Length: 287
Image 1 (cartoon, rainbow, N blue to C red):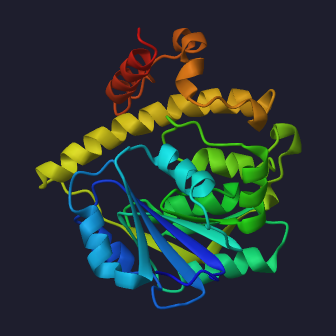
Image 2 (image 1 turned 180 degrees about the horizontal axis):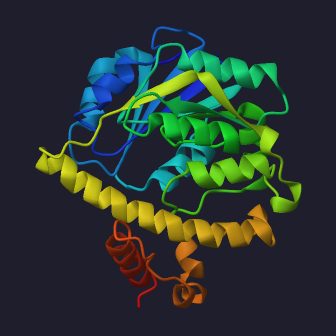
């Protein structure tokens, strides 16, 4: 088991990641006693948990939960798992490889500036990596593959009872907004509460046109991106209005008042996936 006095908590969120989880864990500083690594395996029926246990041994704590959903699992780890405390909380996607030194750089950035609520790492590979990096730096953005929250920010989330909606697609967008708004509304918004760390980065497996499995995964991912697009419109309205305290337990509770206002985007690369996303959202309301 990782040492209980660890200053940095690393949470690896993994769903059906038997192909990538070993590489992910191999990229983390497992031997550093100041860093406690937890792998949250959620809703997986493959060998993700077994591989994580084998690779990590007594240096990694594996939580194998039958219920899926990244936001639900994030809540369960942060709010419902006893003994999870640190000065920094680093979150990693189970299919990402972390650039050496990134975990330490994220924790050091938070320690150097008490006014920061969150720090993010940048993508280091992929066709659009440079564009994403420029966008993150200019917008103080976050990617769900690698980011960190301060221990104080997490403690205040816990005290407030403010949890992520369980059906949220993508934790990073809402958490970035909550960090900038300091758990309140856009009236309290400050960009400088989120910092992009140039010394922290991650690598993702590029999609291959020659792999049917990869293409099926990318198809599902594109629908999720469209659901996320529509959810973000709803979340923006919430944050501009009553603020974080009015977030529902499930965003589907707000779908009925929004679905008539939402339509697929005209872009030919997005239209089909938007249609599929809206159909999923209607189904979530029982309609």
